[in-house]
Image (cartoon, rainbow, N blue to C red; front, side, top):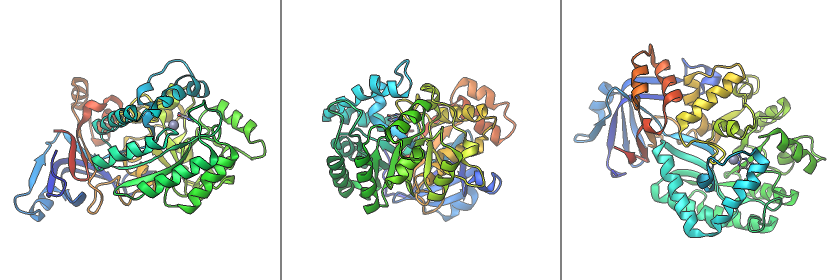
Length: 439
Ligand code: GUN
Ligand code: ZN
Protein backbone atom coordinates (compact mmCIF):
# COMPACT_ATOMS: atom_id res chain seq x y z
CA UNK A 1 0.00 0.00 0.00
CA UNK A 2 1.18 3.50 -0.80
CA UNK A 3 1.27 6.32 1.76
CA UNK A 4 -1.87 8.52 1.89
CA UNK A 5 -0.12 11.81 2.57
CA UNK A 6 2.71 11.84 0.06
CA UNK A 7 1.69 13.40 -3.25
CA UNK A 8 1.21 10.72 -5.87
CA UNK A 9 -0.14 10.70 -9.37
CA UNK A 10 -1.48 8.23 -11.89
CA UNK A 11 -1.56 8.53 -15.64
CA UNK A 12 -3.74 6.99 -18.33
CA UNK A 13 -6.99 7.54 -20.24
CA UNK A 14 -9.69 8.90 -17.94
CA UNK A 15 -13.47 9.21 -17.86
CA UNK A 16 -15.57 11.38 -15.59
CA UNK A 17 -18.76 13.47 -15.56
CA UNK A 18 -19.25 17.14 -14.75
CA UNK A 19 -23.04 16.81 -14.55
CA UNK A 20 -26.04 14.58 -15.21
CA UNK A 21 -26.24 13.27 -18.80
CA UNK A 22 -29.89 12.27 -18.23
CA UNK A 23 -30.64 15.96 -17.69
CA UNK A 24 -28.06 17.80 -19.78
CA UNK A 25 -26.97 15.27 -22.39
CA UNK A 26 -23.75 13.35 -22.85
CA UNK A 27 -21.94 16.06 -24.82
CA UNK A 28 -22.20 18.59 -22.02
CA UNK A 29 -21.35 16.29 -19.15
CA UNK A 30 -18.91 13.54 -20.20
CA UNK A 31 -15.18 14.19 -19.99
CA UNK A 32 -12.94 11.70 -21.79
CA UNK A 33 -9.27 12.53 -21.57
CA UNK A 34 -7.19 10.06 -23.64
CA UNK A 35 -3.98 10.76 -21.69
CA UNK A 36 -4.68 12.24 -18.26
CA UNK A 37 -2.82 12.72 -15.02
CA UNK A 38 -4.71 12.55 -11.73
CA UNK A 39 -2.59 13.85 -8.86
CA UNK A 40 -3.50 13.30 -5.22
CA UNK A 41 -2.41 14.51 -1.82
CA UNK A 42 -3.83 14.18 1.69
CA UNK A 43 -6.70 12.06 0.41
CA UNK A 44 -7.87 14.53 -2.22
CA UNK A 45 -7.38 15.12 -5.90
CA UNK A 46 -5.11 18.11 -6.48
CA UNK A 47 -4.83 18.07 -10.29
CA UNK A 48 -6.70 16.50 -13.18
CA UNK A 49 -6.26 17.13 -16.87
CA UNK A 50 -4.26 16.30 -20.00
CA UNK A 51 -0.88 14.89 -18.98
CA UNK A 52 1.02 17.50 -21.01
CA UNK A 53 -0.72 20.31 -19.14
CA UNK A 54 -0.66 18.79 -15.64
CA UNK A 55 2.88 17.35 -15.57
CA UNK A 56 4.68 20.74 -15.38
CA UNK A 57 2.48 21.77 -12.43
CA UNK A 58 3.39 18.83 -10.22
CA UNK A 59 5.93 18.91 -7.40
CA UNK A 60 9.38 17.80 -8.51
CA UNK A 61 10.15 14.18 -7.74
CA UNK A 62 6.49 13.14 -7.54
CA UNK A 63 5.99 9.51 -8.43
CA UNK A 64 3.69 9.11 -11.46
CA UNK A 65 2.32 5.63 -12.04
CA UNK A 66 1.60 5.24 -15.74
CA UNK A 67 -1.12 2.63 -16.38
CA UNK A 68 -0.71 2.89 -20.16
CA UNK A 69 -3.12 3.39 -23.03
CA UNK A 70 -5.19 0.25 -22.37
CA UNK A 71 -6.33 1.47 -18.96
CA UNK A 72 -9.25 3.67 -17.97
CA UNK A 73 -9.17 5.81 -14.83
CA UNK A 74 -12.59 6.54 -13.34
CA UNK A 75 -13.97 7.77 -10.06
CA UNK A 76 -14.43 4.79 -7.76
CA UNK A 77 -17.70 2.94 -8.21
CA UNK A 78 -20.53 3.57 -5.75
CA UNK A 79 -23.02 0.98 -4.52
CA UNK A 80 -26.13 2.70 -3.15
CA UNK A 81 -27.85 -0.43 -1.81
CA UNK A 82 -26.21 -3.53 -0.37
CA UNK A 83 -26.57 -5.90 2.60
CA UNK A 84 -23.13 -6.89 3.92
CA UNK A 85 -24.56 -9.73 6.11
CA UNK A 86 -25.93 -11.38 2.99
CA UNK A 87 -22.47 -12.00 1.53
CA UNK A 88 -22.54 -15.60 2.82
CA UNK A 89 -25.93 -16.36 1.24
CA UNK A 90 -25.53 -14.91 -2.26
CA UNK A 91 -26.90 -17.37 -4.86
CA UNK A 92 -29.65 -19.01 -2.77
CA UNK A 93 -31.99 -20.91 -5.04
CA UNK A 94 -35.63 -20.89 -5.91
CA UNK A 95 -37.54 -18.22 -4.00
CA UNK A 96 -39.09 -14.83 -4.61
CA UNK A 97 -38.72 -11.94 -2.18
CA UNK A 98 -40.96 -12.71 0.81
CA UNK A 99 -40.19 -16.41 0.74
CA UNK A 100 -36.50 -15.73 0.16
CA UNK A 101 -36.39 -13.53 3.27
CA UNK A 102 -37.90 -16.31 5.40
CA UNK A 103 -35.98 -19.22 3.94
CA UNK A 104 -32.52 -17.77 3.49
CA UNK A 105 -32.08 -14.19 4.68
CA UNK A 106 -33.35 -14.30 8.24
CA UNK A 107 -31.57 -17.58 9.13
CA UNK A 108 -28.32 -16.07 7.80
CA UNK A 109 -28.78 -12.76 9.62
CA UNK A 110 -29.33 -14.64 12.91
CA UNK A 111 -25.69 -15.75 12.73
CA UNK A 112 -24.60 -12.15 13.26
CA UNK A 113 -25.31 -12.45 16.98
CA UNK A 114 -21.72 -13.74 16.91
CA UNK A 115 -19.25 -10.84 16.75
CA UNK A 116 -16.34 -12.85 15.40
CA UNK A 117 -18.48 -14.12 12.53
CA UNK A 118 -19.70 -10.57 11.89
CA UNK A 119 -16.15 -9.27 11.63
CA UNK A 120 -15.10 -12.06 9.30
CA UNK A 121 -17.99 -11.29 6.96
CA UNK A 122 -17.47 -7.49 7.18
CA UNK A 123 -13.83 -7.93 6.14
CA UNK A 124 -14.68 -10.28 3.29
CA UNK A 125 -17.40 -7.88 2.13
CA UNK A 126 -15.13 -4.82 2.09
CA UNK A 127 -12.32 -6.71 0.36
CA UNK A 128 -14.77 -7.85 -2.31
CA UNK A 129 -15.86 -4.22 -2.77
CA UNK A 130 -12.27 -3.08 -3.29
CA UNK A 131 -11.57 -5.95 -5.71
CA UNK A 132 -14.48 -4.62 -7.75
CA UNK A 133 -13.51 -0.96 -7.60
CA UNK A 134 -16.31 -0.01 -5.20
CA UNK A 135 -15.05 2.76 -2.94
CA UNK A 136 -18.32 3.93 -1.36
CA UNK A 137 -21.38 1.97 -0.41
CA UNK A 138 -24.63 2.48 1.48
CA UNK A 139 -24.99 -0.63 3.57
CA UNK A 140 -27.67 -2.48 5.52
CA UNK A 141 -26.30 -4.27 8.58
CA UNK A 142 -28.40 -6.65 10.71
CA UNK A 143 -30.68 -5.83 13.63
CA UNK A 144 -27.69 -6.23 15.97
CA UNK A 145 -26.15 -2.86 16.87
CA UNK A 146 -22.70 -4.44 16.92
CA UNK A 147 -23.05 -5.36 13.25
CA UNK A 148 -22.93 -1.65 12.42
CA UNK A 149 -20.12 -1.00 14.92
CA UNK A 150 -17.99 -3.73 13.38
CA UNK A 151 -18.60 -2.67 9.78
CA UNK A 152 -17.77 0.96 10.65
CA UNK A 153 -14.57 -0.15 12.43
CA UNK A 154 -13.43 -2.11 9.41
CA UNK A 155 -14.37 0.69 6.97
CA UNK A 156 -12.55 3.23 9.12
CA UNK A 157 -9.40 1.10 9.07
CA UNK A 158 -9.49 1.24 5.26
CA UNK A 159 -10.28 4.97 5.15
CA UNK A 160 -13.49 4.38 3.21
CA UNK A 161 -16.33 6.81 2.73
CA UNK A 162 -19.21 4.55 3.66
CA UNK A 163 -22.77 4.88 4.97
CA UNK A 164 -24.40 2.14 6.99
CA UNK A 165 -27.09 1.48 9.53
CA UNK A 166 -28.36 -1.12 11.92
CA UNK A 167 -31.57 -2.58 10.54
CA UNK A 168 -34.78 -1.66 12.38
CA UNK A 169 -37.19 -4.58 12.44
CA UNK A 170 -39.79 -5.16 15.16
CA UNK A 171 -42.31 -7.52 13.54
CA UNK A 172 -42.70 -10.32 11.00
CA UNK A 173 -39.20 -11.58 11.69
CA UNK A 174 -38.02 -14.50 13.85
CA UNK A 175 -37.02 -14.42 17.50
CA UNK A 176 -33.53 -13.04 17.83
CA UNK A 177 -33.94 -10.69 14.87
CA UNK A 178 -36.45 -8.22 16.29
CA UNK A 179 -35.78 -5.02 18.17
CA UNK A 180 -38.49 -2.73 19.59
CA UNK A 181 -39.58 0.73 18.53
CA UNK A 182 -37.79 2.23 21.54
CA UNK A 183 -34.72 -0.03 21.64
CA UNK A 184 -34.23 0.34 17.88
CA UNK A 185 -34.39 4.11 18.30
CA UNK A 186 -31.96 4.09 21.22
CA UNK A 187 -29.45 1.81 19.48
CA UNK A 188 -29.60 3.87 16.28
CA UNK A 189 -29.13 7.12 18.22
CA UNK A 190 -26.08 5.72 20.00
CA UNK A 191 -24.63 4.64 16.65
CA UNK A 192 -25.30 8.08 15.13
CA UNK A 193 -23.49 9.74 18.03
CA UNK A 194 -20.55 7.40 17.70
CA UNK A 195 -20.13 7.16 13.94
CA UNK A 196 -22.00 9.79 11.93
CA UNK A 197 -19.49 12.29 10.56
CA UNK A 198 -16.52 10.48 12.12
CA UNK A 199 -13.85 10.69 9.42
CA UNK A 200 -15.59 9.70 6.20
CA UNK A 201 -18.35 7.62 7.78
CA UNK A 202 -22.06 8.40 7.66
CA UNK A 203 -25.03 6.89 9.42
CA UNK A 204 -28.08 5.67 7.50
CA UNK A 205 -31.25 5.22 9.56
CA UNK A 206 -32.43 1.84 8.30
CA UNK A 207 -36.02 0.62 8.78
CA UNK A 208 -35.76 -2.58 6.68
CA UNK A 209 -39.17 -2.07 5.06
CA UNK A 210 -42.78 -1.46 6.04
CA UNK A 211 -43.38 -5.22 6.27
CA UNK A 212 -41.02 -5.65 9.21
CA UNK A 213 -41.57 -2.36 11.08
CA UNK A 214 -44.67 -1.51 13.11
CA UNK A 215 -46.23 1.94 12.67
CA UNK A 216 -44.66 2.83 16.04
CA UNK A 217 -41.21 1.88 14.78
CA UNK A 218 -41.64 3.82 11.53
CA UNK A 219 -42.74 6.86 13.56
CA UNK A 220 -39.69 6.50 15.82
CA UNK A 221 -37.41 6.26 12.78
CA UNK A 222 -39.05 9.40 11.39
CA UNK A 223 -38.52 11.26 14.67
CA UNK A 224 -34.87 10.18 14.76
CA UNK A 225 -34.31 11.39 11.20
CA UNK A 226 -36.02 14.72 11.95
CA UNK A 227 -33.58 15.18 14.82
CA UNK A 228 -30.60 14.14 12.62
CA UNK A 229 -31.55 15.25 9.11
CA UNK A 230 -28.01 15.03 7.74
CA UNK A 231 -28.11 11.26 8.20
CA UNK A 232 -29.23 9.15 5.30
CA UNK A 233 -32.43 7.07 5.56
CA UNK A 234 -32.65 3.82 3.63
CA UNK A 235 -35.41 1.30 3.18
CA UNK A 236 -37.04 -0.91 0.54
CA UNK A 237 -40.09 -0.02 -1.53
CA UNK A 238 -42.26 -1.57 -4.25
CA UNK A 239 -39.83 -4.34 -5.12
CA UNK A 240 -42.38 -7.05 -5.95
CA UNK A 241 -46.09 -7.08 -6.65
CA UNK A 242 -46.75 -9.55 -3.80
CA UNK A 243 -44.92 -7.24 -1.40
CA UNK A 244 -46.95 -4.22 -2.58
CA UNK A 245 -50.18 -6.18 -1.98
CA UNK A 246 -49.02 -7.20 1.52
CA UNK A 247 -48.11 -3.63 2.49
CA UNK A 248 -51.59 -2.55 1.37
CA UNK A 249 -53.06 -5.11 3.78
CA UNK A 250 -50.80 -3.96 6.62
CA UNK A 251 -51.53 -0.24 6.06
CA UNK A 252 -55.05 -0.05 4.54
CA UNK A 253 -55.44 3.53 5.68
CA UNK A 254 -52.51 4.81 3.58
CA UNK A 255 -52.95 5.81 -0.06
CA UNK A 256 -49.98 3.75 -1.30
CA UNK A 257 -46.62 2.27 -0.40
CA UNK A 258 -44.66 5.53 -0.48
CA UNK A 259 -47.37 7.20 1.60
CA UNK A 260 -46.66 4.69 4.39
CA UNK A 261 -43.13 6.09 4.67
CA UNK A 262 -44.13 9.68 3.92
CA UNK A 263 -46.78 9.63 6.66
CA UNK A 264 -44.11 8.61 9.18
CA UNK A 265 -41.64 11.32 8.12
CA UNK A 266 -39.52 8.97 6.01
CA UNK A 267 -39.58 10.63 2.60
CA UNK A 268 -37.17 13.50 2.02
CA UNK A 269 -33.69 14.60 1.02
CA UNK A 270 -31.13 11.83 1.68
CA UNK A 271 -33.76 9.06 1.61
CA UNK A 272 -32.61 6.11 -0.51
CA UNK A 273 -35.43 3.77 -1.51
CA UNK A 274 -34.34 0.36 -2.74
CA UNK A 275 -35.93 -0.91 -5.99
CA UNK A 276 -39.12 1.12 -6.59
CA UNK A 277 -40.04 -1.02 -9.61
CA UNK A 278 -43.77 -0.88 -8.98
CA UNK A 279 -44.15 2.77 -7.95
CA UNK A 280 -46.90 4.82 -9.61
CA UNK A 281 -46.36 8.09 -11.46
CA UNK A 282 -47.73 10.07 -8.50
CA UNK A 283 -45.16 8.36 -6.26
CA UNK A 284 -42.30 9.21 -8.64
CA UNK A 285 -43.58 12.78 -8.65
CA UNK A 286 -43.47 12.80 -4.85
CA UNK A 287 -39.90 11.39 -4.80
CA UNK A 288 -38.84 14.14 -7.20
CA UNK A 289 -40.46 16.85 -5.08
CA UNK A 290 -38.92 15.43 -1.90
CA UNK A 291 -35.46 15.14 -3.54
CA UNK A 292 -35.34 11.48 -2.47
CA UNK A 293 -33.55 8.74 -4.41
CA UNK A 294 -34.14 5.28 -5.81
CA UNK A 295 -31.44 2.58 -5.72
CA UNK A 296 -31.77 0.56 -8.93
CA UNK A 297 -30.64 -3.04 -8.28
CA UNK A 298 -30.94 -4.92 -11.57
CA UNK A 299 -29.10 -8.17 -10.77
CA UNK A 300 -31.31 -8.59 -7.71
CA UNK A 301 -34.48 -7.75 -9.63
CA UNK A 302 -33.76 -10.42 -12.22
CA UNK A 303 -32.55 -12.96 -9.66
CA UNK A 304 -35.67 -12.74 -7.47
CA UNK A 305 -37.95 -12.31 -10.49
CA UNK A 306 -39.11 -8.97 -9.09
CA UNK A 307 -39.51 -7.06 -12.35
CA UNK A 308 -37.74 -4.60 -14.65
CA UNK A 309 -37.10 -1.14 -13.27
CA UNK A 310 -37.81 1.51 -15.91
CA UNK A 311 -34.99 3.99 -15.58
CA UNK A 312 -36.19 6.22 -18.40
CA UNK A 313 -39.50 6.62 -16.59
CA UNK A 314 -37.79 7.43 -13.27
CA UNK A 315 -35.53 10.00 -14.94
CA UNK A 316 -38.29 11.58 -17.05
CA UNK A 317 -37.42 15.24 -17.65
CA UNK A 318 -40.73 16.48 -16.23
CA UNK A 319 -39.97 15.10 -12.75
CA UNK A 320 -36.54 13.42 -12.68
CA UNK A 321 -35.78 11.31 -9.63
CA UNK A 322 -32.25 10.81 -8.33
CA UNK A 323 -31.31 7.23 -9.23
CA UNK A 324 -28.26 5.32 -8.05
CA UNK A 325 -27.07 1.82 -8.73
CA UNK A 326 -27.13 -1.01 -6.17
CA UNK A 327 -25.70 -4.51 -6.12
CA UNK A 328 -28.23 -5.53 -3.42
CA UNK A 329 -26.05 -8.44 -2.37
CA UNK A 330 -27.23 -11.13 -1.51
CA UNK A 331 -30.38 -10.97 -3.68
CA UNK A 332 -28.05 -9.35 -6.16
CA UNK A 333 -25.73 -11.78 -7.85
CA UNK A 334 -22.50 -9.85 -8.36
CA UNK A 335 -20.21 -7.40 -6.59
CA UNK A 336 -19.08 -6.31 -10.04
CA UNK A 337 -20.47 -2.91 -10.95
CA UNK A 338 -19.67 -3.70 -14.59
CA UNK A 339 -21.92 -6.77 -14.36
CA UNK A 340 -24.54 -4.68 -12.56
CA UNK A 341 -24.48 -2.28 -15.52
CA UNK A 342 -24.81 -5.25 -17.86
CA UNK A 343 -28.09 -6.16 -16.13
CA UNK A 344 -29.19 -2.50 -15.96
CA UNK A 345 -28.83 -2.41 -19.74
CA UNK A 346 -31.00 -5.52 -20.09
CA UNK A 347 -33.67 -4.12 -17.74
CA UNK A 348 -33.72 -0.95 -19.84
CA UNK A 349 -33.92 -3.01 -23.06
CA UNK A 350 -36.97 -4.84 -21.75
CA UNK A 351 -38.51 -1.40 -21.28
CA UNK A 352 -37.58 -0.58 -24.91
CA UNK A 353 -34.87 1.87 -23.87
CA UNK A 354 -31.27 1.14 -24.93
CA UNK A 355 -29.40 2.70 -22.01
CA UNK A 356 -26.18 4.23 -23.35
CA UNK A 357 -22.80 3.31 -21.91
CA UNK A 358 -22.25 6.95 -20.94
CA UNK A 359 -25.49 7.04 -18.95
CA UNK A 360 -24.57 3.71 -17.36
CA UNK A 361 -21.11 4.85 -16.18
CA UNK A 362 -22.69 8.03 -14.86
CA UNK A 363 -25.08 5.87 -12.82
CA UNK A 364 -22.16 3.88 -11.40
CA UNK A 365 -20.24 6.99 -10.30
CA UNK A 366 -21.55 10.52 -10.11
CA UNK A 367 -25.21 9.47 -10.38
CA UNK A 368 -24.89 7.18 -7.37
CA UNK A 369 -23.00 9.89 -5.49
CA UNK A 370 -25.91 12.25 -6.23
CA UNK A 371 -28.40 9.63 -5.02
CA UNK A 372 -26.57 9.76 -1.66
CA UNK A 373 -26.23 13.58 -1.86
CA UNK A 374 -22.45 13.14 -1.89
CA UNK A 375 -21.72 14.48 -5.38
CA UNK A 376 -19.62 17.30 -3.93
CA UNK A 377 -17.29 14.73 -2.31
CA UNK A 378 -17.09 11.57 -4.41
CA UNK A 379 -18.16 10.20 -7.78
CA UNK A 380 -16.12 12.37 -10.13
CA UNK A 381 -12.52 13.31 -10.88
CA UNK A 382 -11.78 16.97 -10.21
CA UNK A 383 -9.46 18.96 -7.96
CA UNK A 384 -10.82 19.04 -4.41
CA UNK A 385 -12.78 15.81 -4.74
CA UNK A 386 -11.87 12.90 -2.47
CA UNK A 387 -9.28 10.70 -4.18
CA UNK A 388 -11.29 7.49 -4.63
CA UNK A 389 -10.48 5.98 -8.01
CA UNK A 390 -10.71 2.78 -9.98
CA UNK A 391 -8.37 1.88 -12.82
CA UNK A 392 -9.86 -0.52 -15.36
CA UNK A 393 -7.88 -2.76 -17.67
CA UNK A 394 -9.75 -2.45 -20.96
CA UNK A 395 -8.28 -5.74 -22.27
CA UNK A 396 -8.80 -7.94 -19.20
CA UNK A 397 -9.79 -11.17 -20.97
CA UNK A 398 -8.93 -12.64 -24.37
CA UNK A 399 -12.49 -12.12 -25.59
CA UNK A 400 -12.57 -8.49 -24.45
CA UNK A 401 -9.17 -7.83 -26.07
CA UNK A 402 -10.39 -9.45 -29.30
CA UNK A 403 -13.62 -7.44 -29.28
CA UNK A 404 -11.84 -4.18 -28.39
CA UNK A 405 -9.82 -4.44 -31.61
CA UNK A 406 -13.12 -4.03 -33.47
CA UNK A 407 -14.43 -1.09 -31.44
CA UNK A 408 -14.95 2.01 -33.52
CA UNK A 409 -15.11 4.63 -30.79
CA UNK A 410 -14.91 5.26 -27.06
CA UNK A 411 -18.64 4.68 -26.50
CA UNK A 412 -18.26 1.18 -27.96
CA UNK A 413 -15.20 0.51 -25.82
CA UNK A 414 -17.13 1.50 -22.70
CA UNK A 415 -20.09 -0.64 -23.67
CA UNK A 416 -17.87 -3.68 -24.25
CA UNK A 417 -16.52 -3.34 -20.71
CA UNK A 418 -19.94 -3.17 -19.09
CA UNK A 419 -21.27 -6.16 -21.00
CA UNK A 420 -18.20 -8.43 -20.92
CA UNK A 421 -16.17 -7.10 -17.99
CA UNK A 422 -16.14 -8.11 -14.35
CA UNK A 423 -13.71 -8.08 -11.40
CA UNK A 424 -10.89 -9.09 -13.74
CA UNK A 425 -11.16 -5.65 -15.34
CA UNK A 426 -10.30 -3.89 -12.07
CA UNK A 427 -6.57 -3.26 -12.23
CA UNK A 428 -6.27 -0.99 -9.18
CA UNK A 429 -8.46 0.71 -6.59
CA UNK A 430 -7.49 3.88 -4.72
CA UNK A 431 -9.15 5.07 -1.52
CA UNK A 432 -8.33 8.57 -0.28
CA UNK A 433 -5.25 8.62 -2.49
CA UNK A 434 -3.94 5.26 -1.31
CA UNK A 435 -3.83 2.13 -3.46
CA UNK A 436 -5.81 -0.52 -1.60
CA UNK A 437 -6.18 -3.12 -4.33
CA UNK A 438 -4.22 -4.19 -7.39
CA UNK A 439 -0.85 -3.24 -8.66
N1 GUN B 1 -36.94 -6.25 1.33
C1 GUN B 1 -36.84 -6.32 2.67
N2 GUN B 1 -35.65 -6.85 3.04
C2 GUN B 1 -34.98 -7.12 1.90
C3 GUN B 1 -33.71 -7.67 1.63
O1 GUN B 1 -32.93 -8.03 2.50
N3 GUN B 1 -33.38 -7.81 0.31
C4 GUN B 1 -34.21 -7.41 -0.69
N4 GUN B 1 -33.82 -7.54 -1.96
N5 GUN B 1 -35.42 -6.89 -0.45
C5 GUN B 1 -35.81 -6.74 0.83
ZN1 ZN C 1 -31.99 -4.80 -0.31
